[in-house]
Image (cartoon, rainbow, N blue to C red):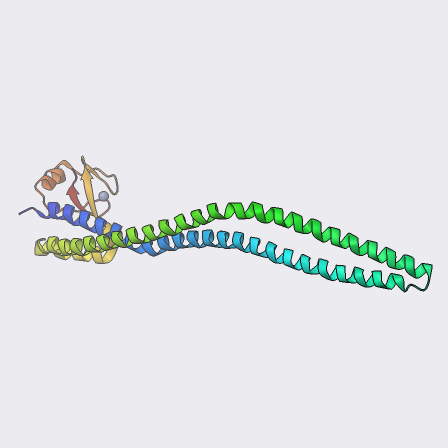
Length: 233
Ligand SMILES: [Zn+2]
């Protein structure tokens, strides 16, 4: 049967392990949310690229509609030319027609520029889609891996809690009473290893007498920091 100091070493290991698992389990939703956000951003970027091409196509339809109405206007002016009552009226109509033709040219140039942009942007879409698909697959994998990790962490924690309880139960009654009081007052950090002759928590040297007691796995408390001690290594 190991002495209290040896049991405290195991208790310390279990408590740190459980604490580490607690932190990992607690961080999991945040880590998942970060990955989720990253995927959502990529989805959004791709959607915007698609939307941009769609908008360009709509703008072209609109410009084509404008050209049609300008052409109708020109035809109307041309009919009016025949009925012009004066040279002044005739010249005004001619100027209007020239101005409308200028509008058509402008619309046509815009359409050409937009068609060029559509071609360019459309070429990039398949690659952008691949990136999003990969991001989706990566996220699904992350989610699956995380669920498996969490399942393992949870099983480890349950087992370690049981082991901790069993180890605590082997402490002699008087030690157990002090242990419970210290844990209740100060939490997990009330146990410390002794490395060489130095308390690992407060870096104070313990006496030769304490050292030999510790080797016999007796229950000791660091005179400087008040932690329960065990021999490391
Ligand atoms: Zn100490």
